[in-house]
Length: 367
Figure 1: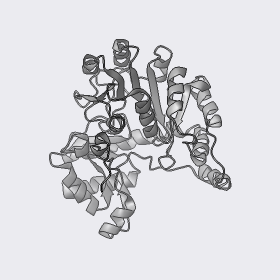
Figure 2 (figure 1 turned 180 degrees about the vertical axis):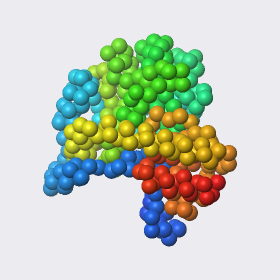
Figure 3 (figure 1 turned 90 degrees about the vertical axis):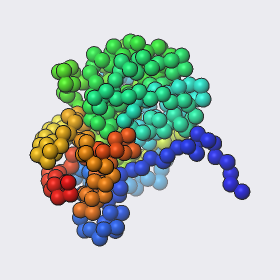
Figure 4 (figure 1 turned 135 degrees about the horizontal axis):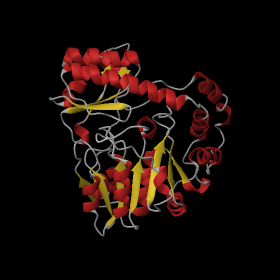
Protein backbone atom coordinates (compact mmCIF):
# COMPACT_ATOMS: atom_id res chain seq x y z
CA UNK A 1 0.00 0.00 0.00
CA UNK A 2 1.28 3.47 -0.93
CA UNK A 3 1.14 6.05 1.84
CA UNK A 4 -0.68 9.18 0.72
CA UNK A 5 1.51 12.26 0.37
CA UNK A 6 0.02 15.67 1.10
CA UNK A 7 -1.06 17.09 -2.28
CA UNK A 8 0.97 20.29 -1.89
CA UNK A 9 4.13 18.22 -1.33
CA UNK A 10 3.35 15.74 -4.09
CA UNK A 11 3.00 18.62 -6.57
CA UNK A 12 6.47 20.03 -5.83
CA UNK A 13 9.10 19.65 -8.52
CA UNK A 14 12.38 19.09 -6.63
CA UNK A 15 15.13 21.67 -7.09
CA UNK A 16 17.64 20.67 -9.77
CA UNK A 17 21.15 21.77 -8.77
CA UNK A 18 23.97 22.39 -11.21
CA UNK A 19 25.46 19.17 -12.57
CA UNK A 20 28.42 18.00 -10.44
CA UNK A 21 31.88 17.97 -12.00
CA UNK A 22 32.43 14.32 -11.07
CA UNK A 23 29.28 13.20 -12.93
CA UNK A 24 30.39 14.93 -16.13
CA UNK A 25 33.88 13.44 -15.90
CA UNK A 26 32.47 9.94 -15.57
CA UNK A 27 29.82 10.37 -18.25
CA UNK A 28 32.10 11.75 -20.98
CA UNK A 29 35.49 10.43 -19.89
CA UNK A 30 36.90 13.90 -19.41
CA UNK A 31 39.95 14.70 -17.29
CA UNK A 32 39.13 18.41 -16.99
CA UNK A 33 35.69 19.87 -16.41
CA UNK A 34 34.84 23.53 -15.76
CA UNK A 35 31.79 24.32 -13.64
CA UNK A 36 30.17 27.67 -14.36
CA UNK A 37 26.64 26.71 -13.36
CA UNK A 38 26.02 27.52 -9.70
CA UNK A 39 27.37 31.06 -9.17
CA UNK A 40 30.05 29.90 -6.76
CA UNK A 41 33.20 31.96 -6.24
CA UNK A 42 35.74 29.87 -8.12
CA UNK A 43 38.61 31.73 -6.46
CA UNK A 44 38.04 29.39 -3.52
CA UNK A 45 39.32 30.06 0.00
CA UNK A 46 42.53 31.92 0.88
CA UNK A 47 45.35 29.56 1.88
CA UNK A 48 45.48 31.14 5.35
CA UNK A 49 41.80 30.36 5.94
CA UNK A 50 42.25 26.78 4.75
CA UNK A 51 45.15 26.30 7.14
CA UNK A 52 43.24 27.77 10.07
CA UNK A 53 40.18 25.63 9.37
CA UNK A 54 42.20 22.44 9.63
CA UNK A 55 42.83 23.28 13.29
CA UNK A 56 39.06 23.28 13.91
CA UNK A 57 38.51 19.67 12.83
CA UNK A 58 39.34 18.33 16.29
CA UNK A 59 36.32 20.20 17.72
CA UNK A 60 33.74 18.67 15.39
CA UNK A 61 32.63 16.11 17.96
CA UNK A 62 30.98 19.01 19.83
CA UNK A 63 27.60 20.44 18.97
CA UNK A 64 27.83 23.91 17.43
CA UNK A 65 26.90 27.06 19.29
CA UNK A 66 23.13 27.20 18.82
CA UNK A 67 23.13 30.97 19.36
CA UNK A 68 25.93 31.52 16.81
CA UNK A 69 27.38 33.94 19.37
CA UNK A 70 30.77 34.85 17.89
CA UNK A 71 29.50 35.27 14.35
CA UNK A 72 26.50 37.21 15.61
CA UNK A 73 28.85 39.64 17.38
CA UNK A 74 31.05 40.01 14.31
CA UNK A 75 28.12 40.72 11.98
CA UNK A 76 26.47 43.12 14.44
CA UNK A 77 29.69 45.14 14.47
CA UNK A 78 30.10 44.92 10.70
CA UNK A 79 26.53 46.00 9.93
CA UNK A 80 26.11 48.40 12.87
CA UNK A 81 23.03 46.56 14.10
CA UNK A 82 22.02 45.14 17.46
CA UNK A 83 22.92 41.49 18.01
CA UNK A 84 19.19 40.71 18.37
CA UNK A 85 18.65 41.68 14.72
CA UNK A 86 20.15 38.46 13.32
CA UNK A 87 18.90 34.96 12.56
CA UNK A 88 21.06 32.24 11.00
CA UNK A 89 20.30 29.35 8.70
CA UNK A 90 21.75 26.39 6.86
CA UNK A 91 22.11 28.65 3.86
CA UNK A 92 19.56 31.37 3.22
CA UNK A 93 17.40 28.62 1.66
CA UNK A 94 16.58 27.42 5.16
CA UNK A 95 15.64 30.95 6.19
CA UNK A 96 13.15 31.08 3.31
CA UNK A 97 11.53 27.93 4.64
CA UNK A 98 11.46 29.34 8.20
CA UNK A 99 9.73 32.44 6.86
CA UNK A 100 7.10 30.29 5.19
CA UNK A 101 6.59 28.22 8.35
CA UNK A 102 6.18 31.36 10.46
CA UNK A 103 4.05 33.52 8.19
CA UNK A 104 2.42 31.53 5.36
CA UNK A 105 -0.33 28.92 5.23
CA UNK A 106 -3.42 27.75 3.31
CA UNK A 107 -5.11 31.16 3.52
CA UNK A 108 -1.97 33.30 3.59
CA UNK A 109 -0.71 34.25 0.16
CA UNK A 110 2.84 34.70 -1.13
CA UNK A 111 3.76 37.11 -3.94
CA UNK A 112 6.60 35.83 -6.13
CA UNK A 113 8.04 37.07 -9.40
CA UNK A 114 8.22 35.00 -12.54
CA UNK A 115 11.75 34.27 -13.74
CA UNK A 116 13.38 34.27 -10.32
CA UNK A 117 14.88 31.92 -7.72
CA UNK A 118 12.63 28.87 -7.37
CA UNK A 119 13.04 28.44 -3.61
CA UNK A 120 10.59 31.27 -2.88
CA UNK A 121 7.72 29.36 -4.47
CA UNK A 122 9.05 26.07 -3.06
CA UNK A 123 8.87 27.39 0.51
CA UNK A 124 5.29 28.53 -0.01
CA UNK A 125 4.33 25.17 -1.53
CA UNK A 126 5.70 23.31 1.48
CA UNK A 127 3.20 25.03 3.79
CA UNK A 128 0.38 24.82 1.22
CA UNK A 129 0.19 28.59 0.79
CA UNK A 130 -1.41 30.15 -2.30
CA UNK A 131 1.12 31.76 -4.64
CA UNK A 132 0.54 34.71 -6.91
CA UNK A 133 3.18 35.40 -9.57
CA UNK A 134 4.11 38.77 -11.03
CA UNK A 135 5.76 39.04 -14.47
CA UNK A 136 9.22 40.51 -14.94
CA UNK A 137 9.51 43.73 -16.93
CA UNK A 138 12.57 43.88 -19.19
CA UNK A 139 14.06 40.98 -17.21
CA UNK A 140 13.72 43.07 -14.01
CA UNK A 141 11.40 42.98 -11.00
CA UNK A 142 8.34 45.14 -11.63
CA UNK A 143 7.68 46.66 -8.20
CA UNK A 144 4.68 48.66 -9.42
CA UNK A 145 3.06 45.41 -10.55
CA UNK A 146 3.92 43.83 -7.20
CA UNK A 147 2.21 46.67 -5.34
CA UNK A 148 -0.89 46.30 -7.53
CA UNK A 149 -0.99 42.54 -6.87
CA UNK A 150 -1.25 42.82 -3.06
CA UNK A 151 -4.54 41.49 -1.68
CA UNK A 152 -5.97 41.15 1.85
CA UNK A 153 -4.66 37.55 1.77
CA UNK A 154 -1.07 38.56 1.01
CA UNK A 155 1.30 37.87 3.88
CA UNK A 156 4.80 37.55 2.36
CA UNK A 157 6.42 39.22 -0.66
CA UNK A 158 9.68 37.74 -1.97
CA UNK A 159 12.11 40.10 -3.75
CA UNK A 160 15.52 39.22 -5.20
CA UNK A 161 18.00 42.06 -5.82
CA UNK A 162 20.08 41.43 -7.92
CA UNK A 163 17.67 38.97 -9.45
CA UNK A 164 18.76 35.40 -9.99
CA UNK A 165 18.98 34.44 -12.88
CA UNK A 166 18.89 37.70 -14.84
CA UNK A 167 21.35 39.73 -12.74
CA UNK A 168 19.19 42.86 -12.99
CA UNK A 169 18.54 45.28 -10.12
CA UNK A 170 15.90 47.73 -8.97
CA UNK A 171 16.84 51.05 -7.40
CA UNK A 172 16.86 52.35 -3.85
CA UNK A 173 14.12 54.87 -4.65
CA UNK A 174 11.95 52.16 -6.25
CA UNK A 175 12.35 49.91 -3.20
CA UNK A 176 11.48 52.70 -0.79
CA UNK A 177 8.42 53.70 -2.80
CA UNK A 178 7.31 50.08 -2.93
CA UNK A 179 7.63 49.28 0.77
CA UNK A 180 5.65 52.42 1.56
CA UNK A 181 2.73 50.82 -0.30
CA UNK A 182 2.97 47.48 1.51
CA UNK A 183 0.56 47.01 4.46
CA UNK A 184 2.34 46.71 7.79
CA UNK A 185 0.99 43.16 8.28
CA UNK A 186 2.78 41.92 5.13
CA UNK A 187 6.40 40.77 5.36
CA UNK A 188 8.80 41.93 2.65
CA UNK A 189 11.67 39.48 2.12
CA UNK A 190 14.63 41.16 0.38
CA UNK A 191 17.06 38.49 -0.78
CA UNK A 192 20.49 40.06 -1.28
CA UNK A 193 22.48 36.89 -1.94
CA UNK A 194 24.58 38.75 -4.51
CA UNK A 195 24.73 42.04 -2.63
CA UNK A 196 28.53 42.23 -2.41
CA UNK A 197 28.88 42.01 -6.19
CA UNK A 198 26.26 44.71 -6.81
CA UNK A 199 27.63 47.45 -4.53
CA UNK A 200 28.04 50.60 -6.62
CA UNK A 201 25.83 49.33 -9.45
CA UNK A 202 23.26 51.52 -11.14
CA UNK A 203 20.05 50.80 -13.02
CA UNK A 204 19.77 51.68 -16.75
CA UNK A 205 18.46 55.14 -15.82
CA UNK A 206 21.40 55.78 -13.48
CA UNK A 207 19.58 55.13 -10.20
CA UNK A 208 21.59 53.67 -7.32
CA UNK A 209 21.45 50.07 -6.09
CA UNK A 210 20.00 49.88 -2.55
CA UNK A 211 21.53 48.49 0.63
CA UNK A 212 18.71 46.67 2.40
CA UNK A 213 20.18 47.46 5.81
CA UNK A 214 19.35 51.15 5.29
CA UNK A 215 15.64 50.30 5.23
CA UNK A 216 15.55 48.24 8.41
CA UNK A 217 15.42 51.29 10.66
CA UNK A 218 12.32 52.54 8.87
CA UNK A 219 10.33 49.37 8.23
CA UNK A 220 9.48 46.72 10.81
CA UNK A 221 7.97 44.43 8.16
CA UNK A 222 11.23 43.88 6.27
CA UNK A 223 13.83 41.09 6.47
CA UNK A 224 17.10 41.29 4.53
CA UNK A 225 18.80 38.00 3.64
CA UNK A 226 22.52 37.59 2.99
CA UNK A 227 24.69 34.53 2.41
CA UNK A 228 28.30 33.34 2.68
CA UNK A 229 27.84 31.07 -0.35
CA UNK A 230 28.71 33.56 -3.08
CA UNK A 231 31.22 36.34 -2.44
CA UNK A 232 32.65 34.57 0.61
CA UNK A 233 33.37 31.21 -1.11
CA UNK A 234 31.51 29.08 1.45
CA UNK A 235 28.82 27.43 -0.68
CA UNK A 236 29.92 24.04 0.64
CA UNK A 237 29.42 25.10 4.25
CA UNK A 238 25.81 26.30 3.83
CA UNK A 239 25.47 29.37 6.00
CA UNK A 240 23.26 32.40 5.55
CA UNK A 241 21.68 35.03 7.78
CA UNK A 242 18.77 37.40 8.00
CA UNK A 243 18.53 40.90 9.48
CA UNK A 244 15.18 42.17 10.77
CA UNK A 245 13.23 43.62 13.67
CA UNK A 246 13.27 41.68 16.97
CA UNK A 247 9.69 40.49 16.49
CA UNK A 248 10.51 38.86 13.14
CA UNK A 249 13.72 37.33 14.46
CA UNK A 250 11.84 35.89 17.45
CA UNK A 251 9.22 34.30 15.20
CA UNK A 252 11.84 32.68 12.96
CA UNK A 253 13.82 31.39 15.92
CA UNK A 254 10.70 29.63 17.15
CA UNK A 255 10.49 27.75 13.85
CA UNK A 256 14.25 27.11 13.66
CA UNK A 257 15.73 23.78 14.64
CA UNK A 258 18.44 23.88 17.33
CA UNK A 259 22.05 23.70 16.08
CA UNK A 260 20.95 24.38 12.49
CA UNK A 261 24.29 26.01 11.57
CA UNK A 262 27.17 23.60 11.96
CA UNK A 263 30.35 24.37 13.88
CA UNK A 264 32.63 24.27 10.83
CA UNK A 265 30.44 26.74 8.92
CA UNK A 266 30.45 29.20 11.80
CA UNK A 267 34.24 29.08 12.08
CA UNK A 268 34.70 29.44 8.31
CA UNK A 269 32.40 32.47 8.14
CA UNK A 270 34.28 34.17 10.98
CA UNK A 271 37.60 33.59 9.27
CA UNK A 272 36.36 34.93 5.94
CA UNK A 273 35.03 38.11 7.56
CA UNK A 274 38.57 38.80 8.77
CA UNK A 275 39.82 38.93 5.16
CA UNK A 276 39.54 42.70 5.00
CA UNK A 277 40.52 43.16 1.35
CA UNK A 278 38.71 40.08 0.03
CA UNK A 279 35.42 41.75 -0.90
CA UNK A 280 37.06 44.58 -2.82
CA UNK A 281 39.50 42.30 -4.64
CA UNK A 282 36.87 39.76 -5.66
CA UNK A 283 34.43 42.44 -6.82
CA UNK A 284 37.14 44.05 -8.96
CA UNK A 285 38.15 40.68 -10.39
CA UNK A 286 34.57 39.65 -11.19
CA UNK A 287 33.79 43.00 -12.82
CA UNK A 288 36.82 42.69 -15.11
CA UNK A 289 36.13 39.08 -16.07
CA UNK A 290 32.42 39.77 -16.48
CA UNK A 291 33.27 42.50 -18.97
CA UNK A 292 35.47 40.09 -20.93
CA UNK A 293 32.69 37.49 -20.97
CA UNK A 294 30.14 40.05 -22.13
CA UNK A 295 32.45 41.09 -24.98
CA UNK A 296 32.94 37.45 -25.95
CA UNK A 297 29.20 36.82 -26.05
CA UNK A 298 28.59 39.96 -28.10
CA UNK A 299 31.31 38.91 -30.55
CA UNK A 300 29.41 35.68 -31.15
CA UNK A 301 26.32 37.72 -31.99
CA UNK A 302 24.45 37.44 -28.68
CA UNK A 303 22.95 40.17 -26.48
CA UNK A 304 23.69 39.39 -22.82
CA UNK A 305 21.75 41.22 -20.12
CA UNK A 306 23.75 43.71 -18.04
CA UNK A 307 24.41 41.93 -14.76
CA UNK A 308 25.12 43.28 -11.28
CA UNK A 309 25.97 39.81 -9.96
CA UNK A 310 28.72 37.23 -10.58
CA UNK A 311 26.89 35.62 -13.49
CA UNK A 312 25.53 36.52 -16.92
CA UNK A 313 22.13 35.71 -18.42
CA UNK A 314 21.81 35.56 -22.19
CA UNK A 315 19.16 34.49 -24.68
CA UNK A 316 20.74 32.09 -27.20
CA UNK A 317 18.03 31.80 -29.89
CA UNK A 318 17.84 28.02 -29.49
CA UNK A 319 16.81 25.66 -26.71
CA UNK A 320 19.13 26.37 -23.78
CA UNK A 321 18.95 22.73 -22.75
CA UNK A 322 20.42 21.62 -26.09
CA UNK A 323 23.23 24.14 -25.81
CA UNK A 324 23.83 22.91 -22.27
CA UNK A 325 24.22 19.34 -23.57
CA UNK A 326 26.65 20.41 -26.31
CA UNK A 327 28.83 22.35 -23.87
CA UNK A 328 28.70 19.48 -21.40
CA UNK A 329 30.37 17.21 -23.91
CA UNK A 330 33.22 19.72 -24.11
CA UNK A 331 33.63 19.76 -20.34
CA UNK A 332 31.90 23.07 -19.63
CA UNK A 333 28.93 23.10 -17.25
CA UNK A 334 26.57 26.09 -17.52
CA UNK A 335 22.92 26.41 -16.53
CA UNK A 336 20.01 26.12 -18.96
CA UNK A 337 17.19 28.49 -18.04
CA UNK A 338 14.13 26.45 -19.03
CA UNK A 339 13.49 25.71 -15.36
CA UNK A 340 13.33 29.46 -14.72
CA UNK A 341 10.85 30.05 -17.53
CA UNK A 342 13.36 31.03 -20.22
CA UNK A 343 13.57 28.03 -22.60
CA UNK A 344 15.99 29.75 -24.98
CA UNK A 345 18.44 31.19 -22.47
CA UNK A 346 21.45 30.16 -20.43
CA UNK A 347 23.19 31.51 -17.33
CA UNK A 348 26.95 31.34 -16.92
CA UNK A 349 28.93 32.05 -13.76
CA UNK A 350 31.93 34.36 -13.98
CA UNK A 351 34.82 31.99 -13.39
CA UNK A 352 38.60 32.19 -13.45
CA UNK A 353 40.20 33.70 -16.60
CA UNK A 354 41.14 30.32 -18.11
CA UNK A 355 37.65 28.98 -17.33
CA UNK A 356 35.97 31.94 -19.00
CA UNK A 357 38.24 31.57 -22.03
CA UNK A 358 37.39 27.87 -22.26
CA UNK A 359 33.67 28.65 -22.11
CA UNK A 360 33.82 31.21 -24.92
CA UNK A 361 35.97 28.88 -27.04
CA UNK A 362 33.55 26.00 -26.52
CA UNK A 363 30.54 28.20 -27.17
CA UNK A 364 32.00 29.37 -30.50
CA UNK A 365 32.57 25.75 -31.49
CA UNK A 366 29.03 24.56 -30.75
CA UNK A 367 27.04 27.66 -31.60
